[in-house]
Amino acid sequence: MHNQDWIHPLIEQLLQLRSEMLREEEALQGTLQDITEVHRESARNLARYLALRRHDIRDLQEELTVHGLSSLGRAEADVLGAVDAVLNVLYRLAGDVNRQPSNGYKGGERGRNVLERNTDALLGPPPAKRNVRIMVTMPSEASTDFGLVRDLLVNGMNCMRVNCAHDGPDQWAAMISNLEKAKQETGLDCRIHMDLGGPKLRTGPLQPGPAVLKYRPRRDAYGRVIAPARILFTPARNPQAPPTPADACVPVPASWLSKLGLGDRVNFKDSRGASRTMRVTEVDGQNRWAQSEYTSYLIPGTLLEATFSKTSPHFGKKLTARVGNLPEKPQPIVLRRGDTLIMLRSSVPGRPAIYDQQGRLLSPAIIGVAEPAFLDHVLVGEKIKLDDGKISGIIRAIDADKLTIETVMARAKGSPLRAEKGINLPESELRVSPLTADDIHALDFVAEHADMLGYSFVRTESNVTDLQSRLHALKADNTGIILKIETRQAFEQLPSLLLAAMRSPRIGVMIARGDLAVECGYQRLAEVQEEILWICEAAHVPVIWATQVLELLAKEGVPSRSEITDAAAGVRAECVMLNKGPYIVKAVRALDDILKRMEGHQQKSRSTLRKLRLAELFQPAQLADTPVASTAK
Image 1 (tube, helix red, strand yellow):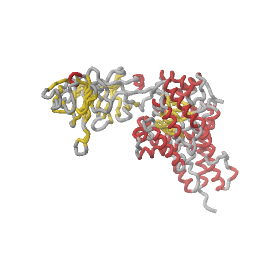
Image 2 (cartoon, one colour):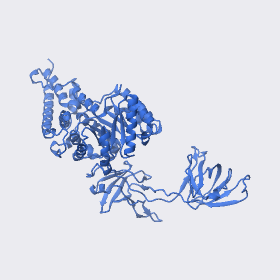
Image 3 (cartoon, helix red, strand yellow):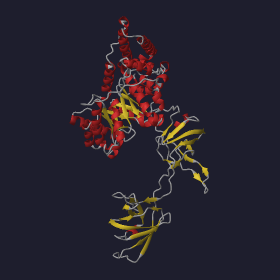
Image 4 (tube, helix red, strand yellow):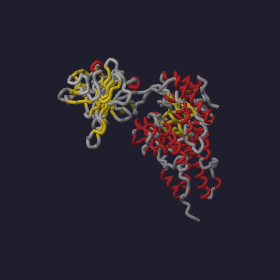
């Protein structure tokens, strides 16, 4: 007989893990009564999985693999069954058949079947030859362009996403009407997902900068002009938008402009004192087109002198005019490492830093915020990230009307900060409702028309139960709830959020990877999205893979190599979301092909199970007893 000394230590380790799983499940009993019947076994499996992931079992996995046994690397869907299956084999090898536990384990098939059932209930039945669904964000044109909606459906769209932060009920209704018509015409199925906007923490407006109009020709690598700049002169009192693309649109007096003809020249000195000239190339009604081969800067009042060609009735004359009023553009704040930024608790227009003639700082840059209530929850020393994480800072001081921020990360040459840019507070405990007044107003429409809704900025169990209560009041308990995991707090509370959501019959999770990258750090994004996939599979909750999937293809018509790889990785989720763009139909067709090809190669993945911090953070005793109109059956 072979040496079997290795068997009993493995049995003891697995029994210890199994015991902890059952204790974790027992601790959840008080919560199970509020969970719908359809999710109760999933909640138990989630609790067992979290117990397993409080341990680093990589050495155990390696030992099991050495002896040709399951490494538990695909245990998420039925973790107790996976452990019992290994124990059964070990008991047989040890000759102790009477101790074999039996969980009816079928290689994870039971758990996967539950996940598939939940996915079908939320996202609809899978399309032919593909299990992963495709969700597409609707552009405004979808309300008027039936052909666009039909083409999206025919090429692979399975879920229509309506972003409630844009357009309004009339446009939403028109989009849905076009979808219903397309479904009848094609016989294809498609669910409706409506995404609540949620509160947006963004930078406020900026003071206008100087009114300067710059144009420049196109040059090749040697600096040679390959296309001159095109300038449209238009009457100052009745300016007209250029009918074709222009590098600059210059308002001038109509009486002067009417005298310009083909071949005439306009001479001037720009704002730098550089002598410049333009040549008139086209007469377009009251407007005149001109070309220039030199970069120029025009400001209001710039003196223009017309020199007429020999064929002009004004030949020999030199008529002058001045540039009229030019639009003032907001001046971005340029921040460098070490710079101070004052963030006001108001939407007062911001401005760049002010320096004296010797370059000494007189006053730091200032910017306001669109939602000052967010800043009531920050602390000194916490991080703040601006413009999708392009700029990072540390809060150094908090006053009644402002925050003082030290810039700790920016580009070497300085990073511009403009109005309406996102603000992330990854370390702050924000106590702001995810439901804005606009969201609450939109809920009536969503409850009537949507199969599911996206819940933005959700962070706590009470956020979930609040939404559930509102849906119950609207008699919309069956509306699917998609938890958008877009903040660090939501990620760290994911197990508790899922258990709270399980009070509703149809639930899902969207990985908002753009915001998560900012909140958790880009270097951690791959790890974070992996953990979300694990936890959701253990809870048998379908996942939507979102943010910038095939973005270049949708916007420009040509994909990058990296985004093709990223789209292929989406096969591990139950749904992949595309954002709008001029080439969105092409992007849907490409994603459909990528997913069909990849599903033959990959289904989820095998993992090595080190200790998981999410599992350590979760404590069943912390589950809120927040009352909610129960939908349990």
